[in-house]
Length: 130
Image 1 (tube, rainbow, N blue to C red):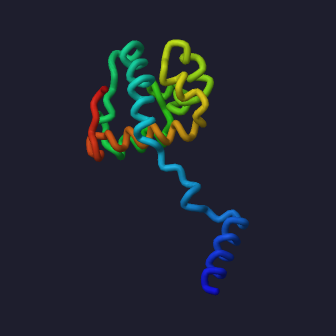
Image 2 (image 1 turned 180 degrees about the vertical axis):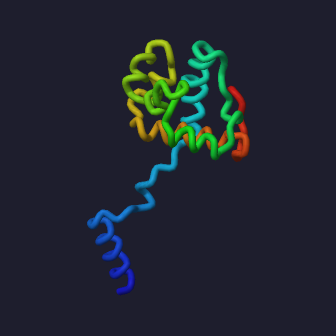
C-alpha cells in the first residue's frame, strides 16, 4: 500500500505542475564543444582578431558573461549566435550550424554554457582553441 501513496503523490505533483528532475536540462558540453569550435572559434578567427579559448576565463567569468548575454562589447547578444535565424544564415558555409539547425535555441545555449564552464580556466577540463 505504501507504493500507492508514493505513486499518488508523484502523480499529484505532475498534475499540479511541480518541477521534475527530468525536466531540467543540464546542457550537453560535447555538443557545446562542437558548436563553440566550429561556429564561435571560426567566426572569431575571421572577424574578431583571433579565437578566444574557453580557458581564457574562469567559470564565474563565463557565467557572468552568459548571464549578461552581451557580445561584441554589448553590440549584440550571445543568444543571437545560437538562434535559428543565425544558424540558418551561416548553414551553407558552416557544417555545425547546418547539423544543429533544428536544436532548440535555449538547449543549444545551455550546451554552450556547459562547455565553457567545463573548459574554463578553473573548470574540470580547461580547453584552449580547438
